[in-house]
Image 1 (spheres, rainbow, N blue to C red):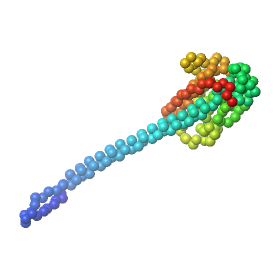
Image 2 (tube, helix red, strand yellow; image 1 turned 120 degrees about the horizontal axis):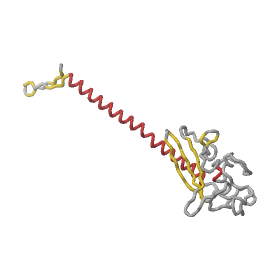
Image 3 (cartoon, one colour; image 1 turned 180 degrees about the vertical axis):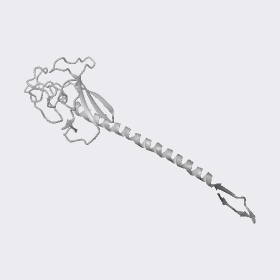
Length: 207
């Protein structure tokens, strides 16, 4: 069985040409396989294109939260201390800054308040300990305490006293030095993005 097309030129029947049914079926099969391959490639490309978007979103989260911590003061004393504007070191403060007070951990006279905290070390429970400093009720939230509504992302903050250039780290609980390294780790889709920054104590009596 085949399809044919017949034309007459000058009264003479033209040579018959056509496509057999087998050829037509093979053509349909080949085209179907090619289309299936193209669709599969598009599906893989679409699925993998979401990964850069998630990573970019994680980077934006890390940048925003790191900036929040870096913008906090890094002074010797808590602003409520009567000698905050004159203390020569953390030990001299009537109300010294200690790790963890803003986050509700630890003991001391420093008042506990909501974010954004008044000092960098308020964001961490202790030096070198990762904590969910940006969670409110177990939910990742912005500086105002509003949930970010970003399912699948978890954030951990670590603050470590560190030497930088010729500046050495401190060696007491109330004096951790003049430089802190701030690490914000954003985890998503079995991946973790870590962003580091530094905060120096350039205005120890700033209120």
